[in-house]
Length: 141
Image 1 (cartoon, rainbow, N blue to C red):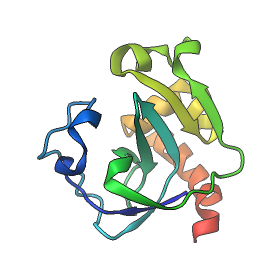
Image 2 (cartoon, rainbow, N blue to C red; image 1 turned 90 degrees about the vertical axis):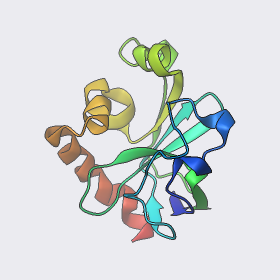
Image 3 (spheres, helix red, strand yellow; image 1 turned 90 degrees about the horizontal axis):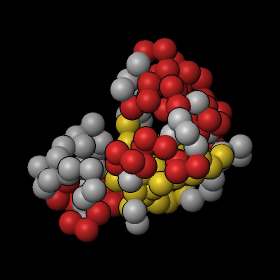
């Protein structure tokens, strides 16, 4: 999947989709307006979808899809689905944040420690993420 950044401030997120404490001033400035970003995972919170994206030379992070225009919707081969409410280790994501689904590369949806490590920018898990980057990003150069 490939997404074009159209905004990098919380003001671009519709009020009805601000489930994780976003305000108008929430800054997603690592994102460059007009920049293209490979999507490495999807996260669903109610009717909102977030993209796992990465700015060069930085760890990945989740950003609301409302900041982007999807320009290539192809799903990478091998992606899997985690329904958080049915998985004991991921269930806390639903209980705390109402995250209902995580979709992405196998490590992201099958190893909770990896998911949390990516979110918290743990160096070991970011390295494991970077190993996936080449495979996922291949169709988009």
